[in-house]
Each structure stands twice: as structure tokens, then as C-alpha cells.
Length: 189
Image (cartoon, one colour):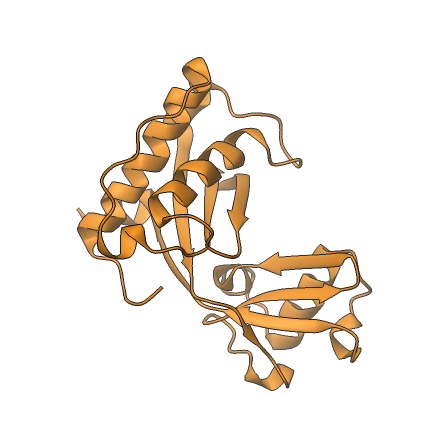
């Protein structure tokens, strides 16, 4: 992403995610996309995370942008509510208890040395062979992890041994995320 989103753009994306989920759960259709200009038209990765009463309820994302941000958010909102294998599908009745958070990702950057990883600033994508796992920057902060714990948990998420990050065959990439959600916006009002 080439810049930071405005408050108006963040609000538009959060409304798009909520309206998308509501419509998709109601009748299986997709809402029309708003006109995308500027950053909203850029191709960048994004995750949509759903929380219900403070607990994770779904999270799906695309690491690399292949479509405009507005379209990525729409598609990831549907996926987070209906395709996260860790949870059953969200129901329309649950939606008033769901808080939506969006993470818009910067491009990936290969790490030569794990000391380059800044906890709270970087997310991690770890790959080795057919295994891969990703954790968003806010996860380490939410759990109070240091760098090594963050690396170990990313290995675990990838289905690798927790020390696989030390293996030269393991690829580690980092990214930053602009994270915003409905809860923060409500508190700011």
C-alpha cells in the first residue's frame, strides 16, 4: 500500500465488510462494490477478523493483493464468516454481537536475520516446503509475546516444529498492517 487510509476510507471498508456479511448470510449474494479511488483501488493484501464478545470468531485474509482493496475486503469478509475451518459459519442472529477488524497489509519483505523482526510492528509469514503459517502484527502484542515466542507460534501455526525458524530451509517474510476496527471507532466517538 502506498500510504495510509483516511478515517473515511476506514469507515467505508468496515461498513462494506458488515454489509457484505449481512447480505451474504441473508441470501448468498454479494453487494455491489463502492467506487474505488486512491488507496481503495490499490491491489494489496488484507485480513478480515471477526470477534464475538471479545473472542475470535473468524479470520481469513489474502497475503498478496490480486484485486482492488475494496474487493479484497468484500471477499475476505465472506470468507471470515463462512470459510474459516476453525469455526462453524456465522449466523445472521450473531451479527449484532460481532465486531469487525480489518488489517490492510504492506508488501512482503524477506528477512535475512530474525533480529529484523519488530514485535508489534511486523507480522510474520513463515514457509518451509508445503507448510506455511502467518500471524498478524497485533497477535504478538495481544498475547504479550517477545520475538522468539512470536517466531515459535508462527512455526506452530504453519504445522512446523517450534524451532523451525532457525532452520536455513525456512523462509521468513515480514509485513506491516494498518489495523482498524469497529470497537476502536465506537470508543473514539
